[in-house]
Image (cartoon, rainbow, N blue to C red; front, side, top):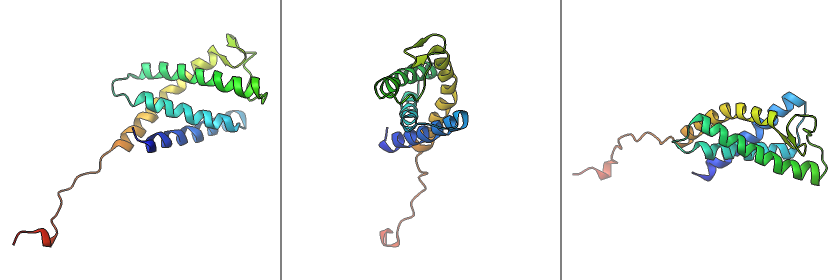
Length: 142
């Protein structure tokens, strides 16, 4: 896996997640943009295995997103007190940072994210067409 592939998937996640948050909530926080980039990069890594099924990819993605969300939430909301989000009113929440309903949403969002990552992988791994080389005149036998 090339660094350029990881960087591209990070930037796609950075911008796509920021756009989703702005459309849904009207704003985003810079840490959410970074988190979105990290998440899509991890989903890209998960989907780089050719043997992984879509359902397994979504399960791994959901667990990864939930773990990252908890980590970022503890830093942003508990330690720094930036109050980026609060799931305290949601059922089955943990410290107001993660909850089962949003983990279910992450599972659903992993479907298009996984398909996007597979598309990115196919596009970036595409080898140039090897056309038959025409010898330079000086290389032709006399």
